[in-house]
Image 1 (cartoon, rainbow, N blue to C red):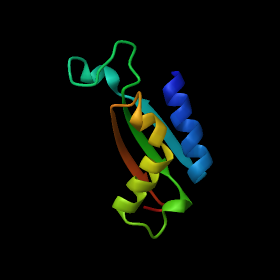
Image 2 (cartoon, helix red, strand yellow):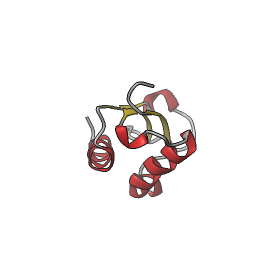
Image 3 (cartoon, rainbow, N blue to C red):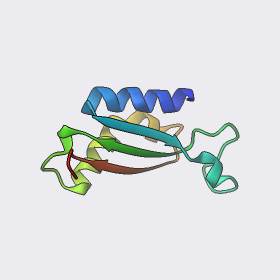
Length: 89
């Protein structure tokens, strides 16, 4: 796991205490596209299940994740896609 992926995982663990969390670096799939850098860690996909999302809309969940990762999204991360759910969804 790269430095940026590890930072994303650490911040999401701290913010949401997820029961499941997978941070996937998908940068290589975007080779030749805008934002790609050699070495990767520019495009990520997050799958996360957390009680913190219960009762929240999809948009509210995404906004919460974006807020938790504001520094990464303002800098080294070009794209972030996500699947965020509450337990049982």
